[in-house]
Length: 490
Image (cartoon, rainbow, N blue to C red; front, side, top):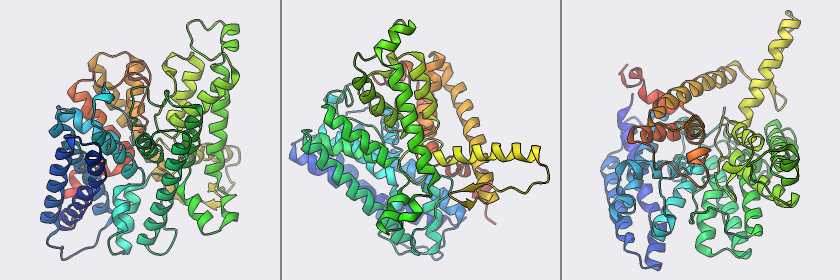
């Protein structure tokens, strides 16, 4: 283990995080808020610590797969701790555990919150809170790769941080790949901000909500999430969530004018089919005419079919892309639409997007494996291969996808058992884990759209913090860090 290159890289990350505080500081100065001082202090401390850790470059700068995974895991933990300090220093979130929970939820684009009164939080801190979504959406290590010399070793960092079964370079150099991805990400975010401003949303709200939409995070600036904005703004955010849930390789192909390759993307096609199918089902299940005819007493719905479609399209996009915004309290819906919502929690967005969940590409692989296993049973001598987008999927990718699912289930069950000691009902506990490990934000029951995670105990909150970070990093960086073999010198 090359510990010196790990310390050196984390130092560079701390410097970068310190400079990122400039954006909320500028908003704090504009609004003349005292909390700006806490941001300035933490920015100085972060930059100073970063300089001390990276003042002497290591002799061996090679980053192997093991170092890449450890750097990624440690970086996200340290980012969450340092990023929580402004909330503590300003008194907005006095509890260290709560502050780390909120910040980890931001960086991992989860959107789960312990804040009960958003209107009381200074705007500069709300801006920092939303900015963590935007940074975490594409990945801060990916952002760092833009500013450092590129080498083949850095692909190990890119793979460790990027969500999905596999990550490949779109162009020969890692740095150029990162630059292309972040350029697309930046332009799409700016377009979203302008669209919301034109639709009548205040500029501050537009920036914060665009950061949350782009990063598929879900932090809002008001207690009712998106419910208080116009239908036009809600529709723009719906489209934004769906677009940011698409594999960014698709946008790279558009930029490089490789239009034929776009048509072969099974994942994107499946993603859109699942989205529209779920929207139709939820629209039917929230239309009052059908609710009344089926005798679903106590279920909340909409009198007009157009309203049911509007809110269903928003909520399905929000949950499937793991954004977590809400226009209505879907906790009050009937069992059928809620069951659909829980189901798409585990599907998630596309690999290579800013969304979380297990990813559509994995589900495609799992379905194809089932089909091919049935074919083998029927025709034992047949030679079959699993293909995705017309290409044969290698055994390593299939094995990794299968191991990921097993690790996901084990972590899910273990976490569920631990937080069950807090005494919440099964729906609350189950969806709390589902909402954090899939980086969604709201669940059902006590953690529904109008609820929160403030009532969980300290131990449960730390379990949920680990789930958020592990879910964002696809489990393995955190599991690698916890393995004793990782730290042994060979």
